[in-house]
Image 1 (tube, rainbow, N blue to C red):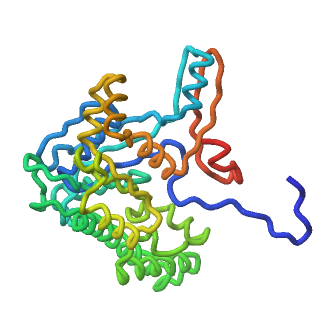
Image 2 (cartoon, one colour):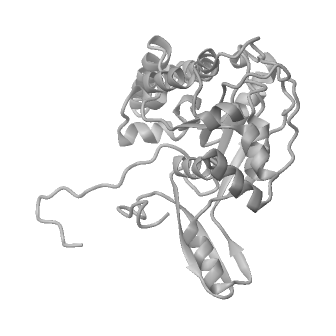
Image 3 (cartoon, helix red, strand yellow):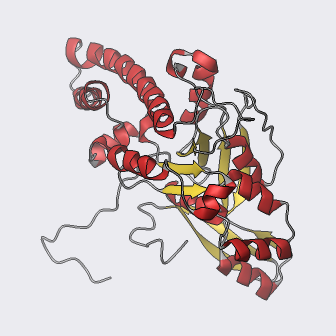
Length: 337
């Protein structure tokens, strides 16, 4: 890289919002009975409880899911190493939230604390109809469900910010602590966005480096990157049609512009998992479909602001997780993944 000319401003690396590290987690959230545990079971090939009643998942199930990569497969086939270590996505299955969770309804406080411990979120939207799987709100309406969950997350952040403001006001205003005044002013900004304008912090504003430093001292629920998974019936996924798809996309564009929306079918993925490779290939060709799991895993991994590089040899082929950071700046996702 050529030296900077005199007076030329040095390009600074981006300041990341979120925890620093590589042991980051992606949680699965949504109302009860929308397919979260079934999706988790397929994703991790585990057997977490997937019963038809609210709160069948109380303690969050957690698993490490290998990140699919053809280059890793090539290296393993080429070197035939004694040890193989792929990149992993840590996934957490969190129990279903209900209306009033921010006030403790349905074990809400415990579940919200599980969400707080995650770094990105898969939101599971149910659009499939099934008389054998009850809906906690009585009928299937994914747009209403989105409003319920997002409002519960906002209310929990609102409660937290108001408490923090009360403490900061004692120091910065009444105590005339000049060092705390910038942080107090920033929390006043967050209050305006979250409480008065009813916005989620993730898309409500652009934050400068100092504000991000304040943000990273806390774990705001509405700042976590969100990936929207649309759980269709097998029939609707194959025909690529459902009356709710456009409405959900419109909701996301209005409330979380730029976020990923991925239609898939939990029941179909479960069916594919039980097939032999030959049966699966035939079924996918006949129905002109493909599993969405790889896309979901890669999107979740990217949302955690992670990348990886390989070391390879006869002893070991290993993918090393690293976080996009000032150390790697300006290396891009194309160079290392």
